[in-house]
Image (cartoon, rainbow, N blue to C red):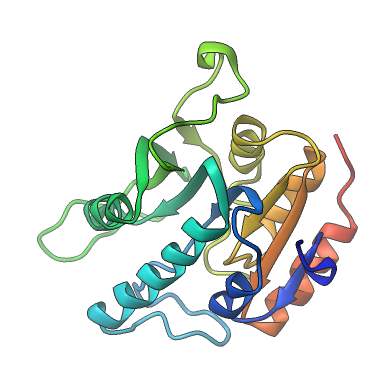
Length: 226
């Protein structure tokens, strides 16, 4: 049984510890935005880990997600372009099946890149399912659905990696049903909580930085169901 204190609230806890407290095959959908390890200035997290340490950490978290997701459930997340080719083989080795690669473009994104590289105009949206079988999306033949989102992140929220709300809502609608549980182990500013509430889903959020926990829960309190 899901611990009642985790349900429909963002909890101040390391996601490794939080995931460990969840029962096997208890989560219907995981939607999240893991750190990119590119030096973003979070309030209390080092986004410049050594590459080997970073991927070892991510691998442990994804292994935990495999345990708690229900068979055929989707794991959907944003990542940096260069990480696409790391995530896919890593997750497939665990037993996840790659389903789709989408694109999010923030039209307000500042142009720029590292020397010798093209500017990064988009971020990847990767989708996997737990196991070889898949859960059908809630959109017959994906009519009216596009895998390229052009949307600015919300304003007035203090977080260096805010996610676009409408895209997040659409992913929640596609990959879960009303009253099911959506997990975000990196809740951050609370976009997943807002998306889940507006789409009549339950949510579980883990976040290690106290000020983001407070912001996420305040945000959730002010959200109404669509």
